[in-house]
Length: 107
Image 1 (cartoon, rainbow, N blue to C red):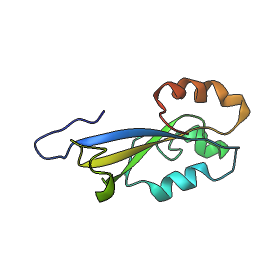
Image 2 (image 1 turned 90 degrees about the vertical axis):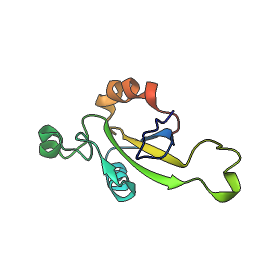
Image 3 (image 1 turned 180 degrees about the vertical axis):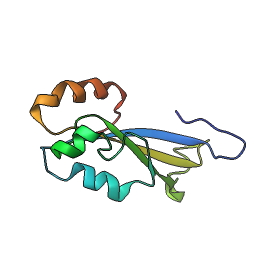
């Protein structure tokens, strides 16, 4: 669950796995939704760029306010942070996807 600091609000983090066939637009979707990117997000690995496919897990996120009608359900939290786990789509990289599954809450 999310951490709180003096300058940030308390966040509820939900990890979402973005899975699909190779070239189905997973990374493009993640790029469109995200406001914060990790250093591994959006195929920054040189080999990923060279081959034109995602080779490793990428992480990025966006936040939303708790909807007014759901504030009682999320008491104690100010925002929901959705962390997107961009997974490789090529069948030969399934071990990478399985390795990331341990942190994924939703797919």
